[in-house]
Image (cartoon, rainbow, N blue to C red; front, side, top):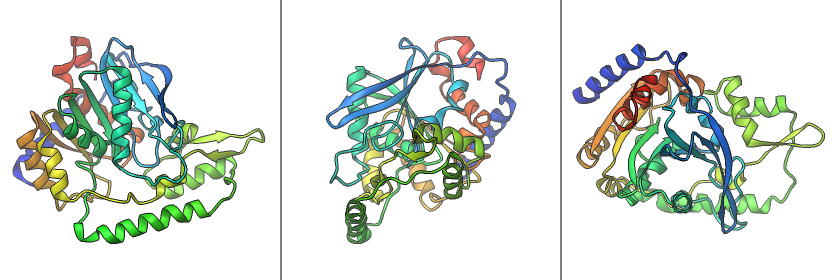
Length: 328
């Protein structure tokens, strides 16, 4: 880690520990559940705060859903208008039409559809993991729309060596067609078995966090058993991935302020490229901060009180009232 990154980390870690108590603060409230129409159905979303607040879009991680932000959202400034999406094929959103592969770039279309319906001219993004990578990419595509981005535990989208493209595309085709060939009824589980299945696949989740995700990621049947609602295609590899050069081209177009949070007990897949990407963000973004915090990949859900202060501090100059600037 460079001297610059270490100094940023030390400052923000001290700030987080000094301001981690939020018990006396007024909390952002869950106010609505909405559906945005799309040609194949709808994109579902949870709404926190009032329409007159600062527009912020929440983007969850791979195979998660909008409940991923249930612990963090109440700790965010109360003048946020925070709309958290279920990406298509996740949570309560419609699955994409049969026969189409799962593609990372389609999520960018989804965001633009939603933003157009909302008629947002300027807004911010808070994304976790895959959602953070999507947010960064969108900010490079539409720099005139995005004011700030916070990415939780992923600095930039996953990149692949161009030489891997043939094998990755083949894998995607085989996985997608394999899922289509298996035409069988969805498995059902007892709530306890569904929770065990989720926790066995996600060691970073606590039992409580797992239940929060399952509440939106499963459907309760008449007999009390549950079935997972996500589209099996979201588990497949995306047909084509960006190379580092592709990602750097998007980053060069970014104009927003950007905060990248890394959770220290999460696997570090970005170590080799972090310095290069940090320099690129520093050159293009109006402000760039990299912060390391204790916690695992789901720290925003498992220990949100540790994550919230850094997010609130990043937005502090953007907030309209002293109450919001210091509530976190």
